[in-house]
Image (cartoon, rainbow, N blue to C red; front, side, top):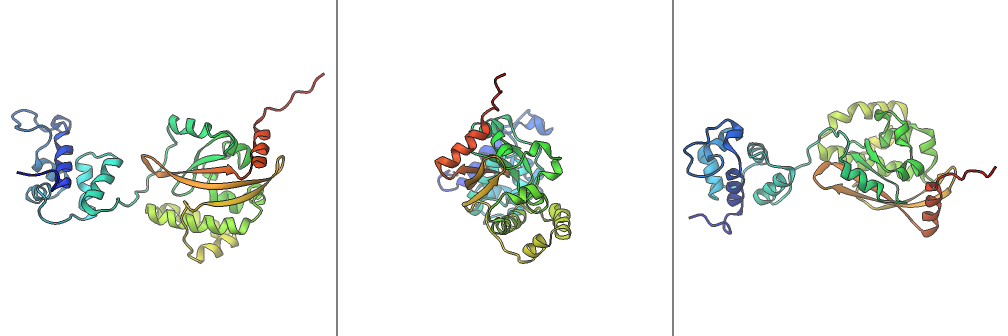
Amino acid sequence: MEHCDDNPLGAYLRDRREKLDPAAFGYPPSRRRTPGLRREEVAQRANVSATWYTWLEQGRGGAPSAEVLERIARALMLSEAEREHLFLLALGRPPEVRYQTAEGVSPRLQRMLDALGACPAYIMTYTWDVVAWNRTAALVLTDYGQLEPKQRNILRLLFCHPHVRAKPQDWESMARFVVAAFRGDVVRAGAGGQVRELVDELSRSSPEFDAMWREHDVRSVYDERAKQILHPQAGLIGLEYSAFAVNGRPDLCLVIFNPATAEDAERIQALLQPPRVGVQ
């Protein structure tokens, strides 16, 4: 008899397998003693031997490789959260981040951005393309809606857009952090091939980027930082930078700039107010 407490991986695999509908995979649903797919059917979909997969569910045969776990996750149609749980049970660590092209964000995420009030915020991909933002970010940082999607890249803006480049008070420090964090994100997401064209373009157009990229420094996008920007209407604004993973979307990162002081919040609030109409 198999005990769940003694074999949590096997119990999890068995539970996921038994919750699948055989008809959805083209298997005949009749004459099945147990619900869901059979072990040999999962093994066939994952391109592993039925005997080895049976041993895996029974807690025998040792830990599988990450590659085999990926095939099993696809065979069982696991969600991102379920896939992560599978890796934690089998290997004691989450899976590597998989790069995927982002196609915007859900209405729920956009509402969350809009609810942040005086905090400029945006959501970017692991290749640092901005895919969603709130009105405060458009007013304080950059009006991304006025740019072509290709130009909504943080590195392109920071190194090649004169108005964006002029805002940070310590541009070089920020640029070094961005390049180092970008390098870490790209490698973590396995997106090196996808950004080669961007890196080559920036290296040709910006000597500063080319020099910083060649230094091979690596930072984490989740490092907390503070910066000051010079806004053409509001003047100097202090902001505290924080980044967060987006639940259920490992390809996305939420970036929030919190006003550093009450005075900074007031300056931002003034920008959010509708323009006054003169009395005739």
